[in-house]
Image (cartoon, rainbow, N blue to C red; front, side, top):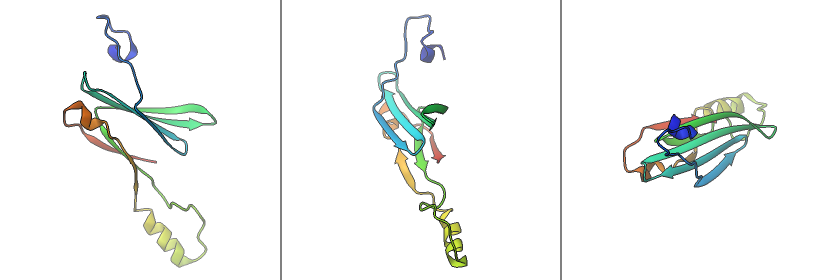
Length: 115
């Protein structure tokens, strides 16, 4: 924790240098890595009215982002289309995958972030 906050007593510090930035609606994903320290990182920020309201941070983790729900988000008027919409809720298409976790030279766990 001291290394990441810059409070390290041995003079080492960690700099977050983004290598990719992607957004999906209110979610912004920022990814970077430091191959000399074998660290990859991903930040997932939620933006509300121009303010960061939530930060999720992943270190040495492979992240896949999926979208939940009906991609059209349009109301259904018939029973058949409601059933079709309900079944599409179970399909979670992958919209983004981290690419830098494999550059740290070691196996890392994988997580799914549903937005």
